[in-house]
Length: 476
Ligand SMILES: [Zn+2]
Image 1 (tube, rainbow, N blue to C red):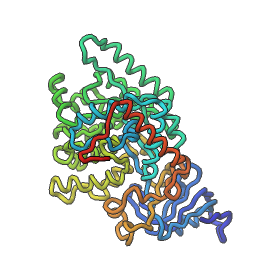
Image 2 (image 1 turned 45 degrees about the vertical axis):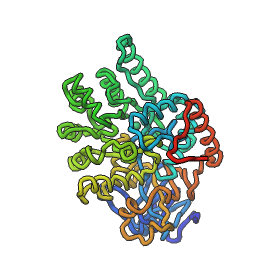
Image 3 (image 1 turned 60 degrees about the vertical axis):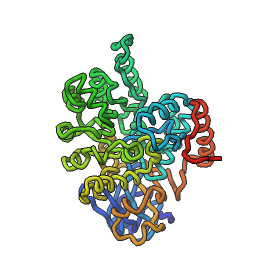
Image 4 (image 1 turned 180 degrees about the vertical axis):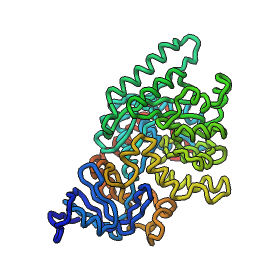
């Protein structure tokens, strides 16, 4: 790395950059999907100020620091994870069996571990989740809402440098006859409003609150409408689980006479602010409503595979993609998916539907890379700020290390990104112009200390929940 104060013959230079990356492969994800084999990228403060052929960018800027990417780096935008549970599951990774159905996983394994966490354990888990995301190239995430102590988690995340949207999710449906429906709804709305006031999204800060709903059948029509109004007022989004299995359509048909998406359309709560996670058991009419409304769908391939959800067998993802639906990725829980690596989600999706439908045209590498970048940015309500490498956007980007077998030779950068590489080849990462991963290490997190805390927190949570790690084979 060189430090350049002045460049010979730089009289024409008009921009001062904090950092210039030269001679790298750059996958911009701009409107034309331009790729530069010998590209340059310059940033100043929290912004990208120039992208293009390396010689042109070099002429346009004077940089304080230069990284020569020749034969070393592939640059992509940071990935955006549209649905992830950052507390509980990261510190109990692997404990949920892979031969039990998802209801057993959720009710017998996940919820009991969530409920016994201390704020300190949640903070450790959130830090650990951020580390895993950053180290595998994810620079922005939307949390699902399974957070007990939002203050402890937000403080922990602020120390990692990651970008995120989060909240403590709510539900309000009175399932028992003695529950006070009006009081439940009032309390849920008050909680959402309190979170939004505490962590406002105005000005695109790194961390902000969203109105998060559990989803499925747990929210009343009033709560759906209020969460939607809050999102529209504040420029944030609503995230909710829906139709991961046929239970949601069955419930809505029985209680409203309409399928879930049709019911949400009747309420006026579909739209570009909304991300629905899983969305596997939709019919064609519902898929059409998703497309027409601009609603984002969050596809969680690793969860679907481990939990036998049926995404590739029953989901209308190819049809929704063809209809222009904004489909993004979530890695969901570490226990169901067991990885927060978005590059694994890309690889899985590039293969799942080709195989299930015996149609090699489905979800090409280019499509899944869009899902992990620009589609995710749009889902996070940050399409104006992140998701591509263009002047004016926030400097969220990743250097993939070419000095690894999967990047030699480099002949088709997008194919190799999806089919050959994974997050373990991420060398360095910037978020908002700040280098948060440098040469495979977090610049802000003490990784060894964190690993010790994660081991202790995971053991403590499992002990408190009364759980033993299952194994089909004898472990002594
Ligand atoms: Zn989830």
